[in-house]
Image (cartoon, rainbow, N blue to C red; front, side):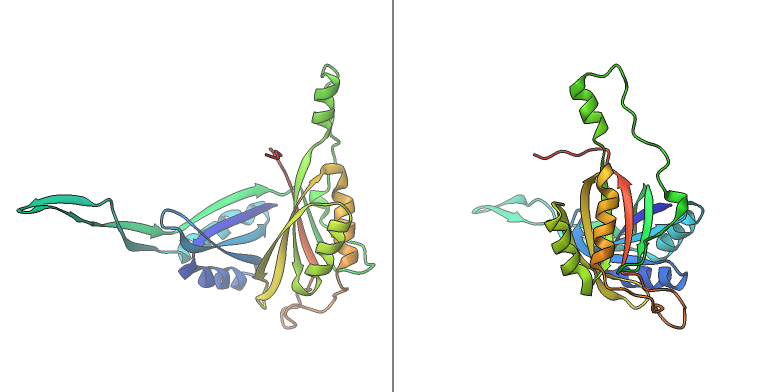
Length: 242
């Protein structure tokens, strides 16, 4: 599985989301800003099987379009009879399209909340343990044994406060971003949790216990279950506190 993060212009975000939902892709939308003009945009998160990755990219590419904007370039001066006058020349720039990042998913879990066991896709279960080279020094061995992961949990807004509270009480640092997504475009929250690899199961268990049990379809006519949380576990290549 791949977690795709597509950065699209605000003007295209609603249409991109609708097109992806029409093709039965689950999405989470985060309104943001950035780029050369610091313009509004949206980061759209899509979890997709590897073989369908190109299809999602094609949908995003076909839906987004380029636009022309004018910005004020550096002022230039011209000499007149009584001195110099500064002018600002507008510069035409083209913006639009999309930037897409892909991250391999280490584990993928859907939680229904309550006491039900997590629904774990067996294709993404961890099968290898971290090994430490025997020639490494004690300090290097200790650092190599500590592998950090990024847990991205998308939870229903009704559960977000409880999940956040219980994770903090368990000593886990997190960042919460209020977002929206799903077939009904309901409000939800995306939690970014940096955690050591051996603590991932504990974090998933906390999220599971903090979510309300849900079994109803989402939406009913589609027969797609509504989950209390959808969890992606990604390897972190760098973990630095500065």
